[in-house]
Image (cartoon, rainbow, N blue to C red; front, side):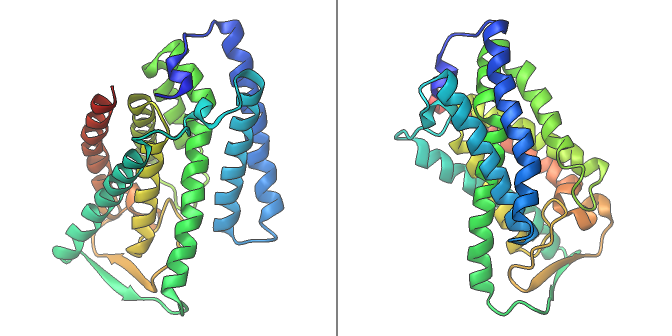
Length: 276
């Protein structure tokens, strides 16, 4: 379990300054860092590295001021089961993405089409993988790091996970081609990731889930939350409506994602039981 989830609940006068400091560091950093990075890098790199930077600063400073300043204070402490949880999460997230993409290919309602301009797909895949890993770690630190953990232990899991998940979904409204179903799916993904953090007591399982899902979609040529990455030189084109394919937002805007996220709760619950 994380140091935070093992500690006793905080009183409001103790809780509010901790959460307030976290927010006061994180959100301005999320505004300033992309502005500074965008002229120096592409949109993907600016988005992922600024998210990672904001998450790391908010967690490190808040943990240093109020705790011991260690990685375990915001869920990144290493334990014997940490690697297993990360790779189990990564495999589960990637497997869920593959499932909703392979079935349409089998039933011929989706096809691969060659895309021009990708000369080195292996190098592109490695580059995008590293960027997405930084992005997944950054988002998990922001939404399920120190502030999330002190709230969970003080006001309870349900009172924390659902509101934070709504904020997680709202944060994606500005993404290109976002839809109501896409934002709803993002909210339930937030519930899944928050539940994974709470049940496992660390960030390794939600980071693995987040990264595995985010990596598998572009490797199949699908859009990721409105981002078109063109990793392999092939794009996935659907012959069914946006309700199933997700349209230009990507599979996260379709009903298959809704179903598969619900199924992932079972895996997360099993990991939580084993850890406890």
